[in-house]
Amino acid sequence: MPCPFIGSFSQAFVKNYGSSLMKQYGKFCPVLTRSFRSLGNDETKCPFIQQNAIISDAPKEMTEDISEPIEQYQYEKFFHEQISAKKKDYSYRIFRKVSRLAADGMYPQALEGAENRQVTVWCANDYLGASRHPAVQDAAINAIKSYGTGAGGTRNIAGNSQMTEKLEKELAKLHKKPAALIFSSCFVANDATLSTLAKILPGCLVFSDAGNHASMIQGIRNSRANKQIFRHNDPNHLRELLAQSPSGVPKLVVFETVHSMSGAICPLDEMCNIAHEYGALTFVDEVHAVGLYGKHGAGIGEERGLQHKIDIVSGTLGKAYGNVGGYIAGSTLLIDTVRSLAPGFIFTTALPPPVLAGSLAAIRLLASEEGRSLRAKQQTIVRYLKLSLLVAGLPQLPSVSHIVPVPVKGADKVAQVAESLMKRGHYVQAINYPTVARGEERLRFAPGPYHTPEMIDSLITALTEAFHENDISFNEFMKNGTCRECSMEYKVDIAYEEPYKYPMQVA
Image 1: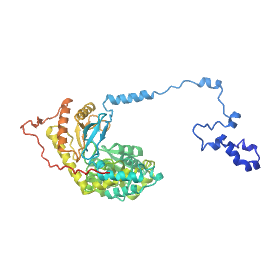
Image 2: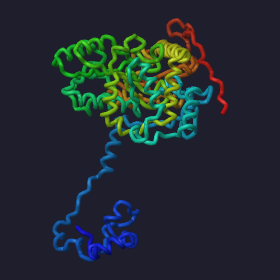
Image 3: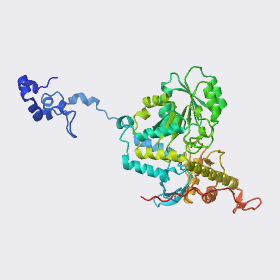
């Protein structure tokens, strides 16, 4: 529609005085002001539109019989019912106010609650204390001073920093792969990678371990690919399902090495061999293994000399490496495909400079001789806890890894035991549904190299008292510090070397 104002003038007049007209009257035109209007202006109030009654209210007679009251959905009532149901079955999550301490000599202590009461932390996934290591802290601090605290946007928009590329090269080298790609978290890494690959591979079939983490399950669901679920860590069932699948069709076999809640370690060699026998790619989650196993901390694959059999490995920077973020490593073309097509990567803000620098320092630290020493001390203290639980007659699920699960059946009971432990100065989070199935509730202990035998002795005493306090029976071997059968004093004789105390850093 031609402008009714300018159209009333001759072309010669507009040509000579158009600039002045725009400056004086342009603010009244809705078309001109639409792209640079200020907050609060109403572009519909054009004098031409208002004067010519182009917009007007409908007559009252036309609206009387259609203005019925609209019934509103009771959103808050629905939310209240959902939360009430969670509280009723004791699966409601209460986030403890716990501030972990990083000062020299304080780790693994934390300040808890409004009173800042000091407690010992047993459930953090900062397995080796890398988050408070001076080399990691210094790297992060220097990166902030040089590059600031934020990434400034996605890698596509804000730019691909040199530290990002260094970190990806270091991760590829660690896992002996041609390329790697980092994400904002390992949940995103698993979700984005699996949903993208299973969606774009024509007719892809996914074979997923029944014990897989929620991030892998979500990625498979989002792909809408056909899936088969095999029994947890059961290569025979995997073979049975693969044997029934058509040949020549793309397949993904998805599983993790160290199970986060049971501490079980998969039969990696056998599962990779079976997957490759039937032409499948292996997607292996090493989240709870990177930094903790293998000569350089690359995980179970490195420890068992099987890195070459893992087609796609996923890991995290937020556990043993003490930072935040996730990653995958694999072939150059596979990584480039995920980089180019995965929305979870493309549209997510890049990791900030201090995280990149801190992660790079942590990976190099745990790949060094000092990292090997930390891993050895961690395994020593893990054995001490397992033996102490055994001698005290306290229950524990069989675990060959650094994760020590203590079953306490019932969401109410496990929450009560966790609360009793907290009162005695020990923080461990109760694990219940949906993290584990109902009836499989537990406490999950993850001791590290900075826990001491004395701390564990105190924990065992507190745990024994907590079981008694909440009327939970167990096969108690100890009475007053001695064996109930022979009265011999309880003592677990195991070599333990204090972790190296880093010198205080001077700013």
